[in-house]
Amino acid sequence: MTDRALAVVRAGALTTVQDRGRPGHAHLGVPRSGALDAPAAALVNRLVGNPPGAAVLETTLTGCTLRPRCAVTVAVGGAPCPVTVDGRPVPWAAPVHVPAGAVLDVGAADSGVRSYVAVSGGVLVEPVLGSRSTDLLSGLGPPPLADGTVLPLGRPGGRHARVDVAPQPAPPAELVLRVTPGPRADWFTPEAVRAFTSGAYRVSSASNRIGLRVDGPSLERARPGELPSEGTVLGAVQVPPDGMPVVFLADHPTTGGYPVIGVVRTLDLPAAAQAVPGTPVHFMAVRRR
Image (cartoon, rainbow, N blue to C red; front, side, top):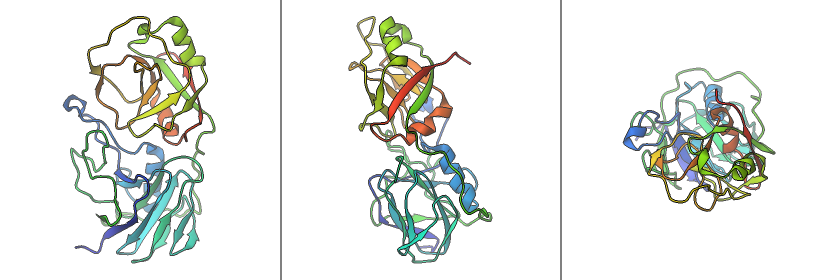
């Protein structure tokens, strides 16, 4: 096996390989997938000299521990967390040299949910439909990392950034999601539509890469019955029978039969990826573009 590889010592709660995803395959029932906090993933790639589409690791809450088999440059961004090399603290959000055989520990998030680990050369697992991303819904791409997994690395193609620390947005203390009316807003009572954009919601612990779930006012339907399945998009806010809105994220299903009351602006979704359970959520109605 090539020495350009990365061994997983501790996989953490959920660590996956992610890049910019595989858009354009919804007609095949394949979700977009890709890094939930795409700006954070792009930034750590820039810090180590990778192209923006290189595959990185996305951790969830508890980080991960890695041992490269060759000397590499790494950068950790997204959710702030402690980072060490062989037990020695190193900067977060900055390029760091990791010698061959050293142990890189990405600690638990101090705030936020998902940290991103870029390695010079990128993670070179086999692409599926043009992407190396793990898709938790369809099962495409590599499985979530496990202790002992060995990941191949590409050859470095550029020089790392010369910065001490790269500024990044802080995880949200309050999540404000701008929404345009959805195709099935008329399936809800006027009171429910008002409650959707004025009610006090909080991020639910049941949230995942498929959808951001919230707790708060239940949205009452104006008509009975169910819809035939129809296409859904990134950011769609679907409302199942319990009345609790679900914001579709990167691994969302491409079709669904529950009514969509609104669609969140794509620019607001990276913050949703970093909102911890209990974070206040406000859906702000905006005009269609």
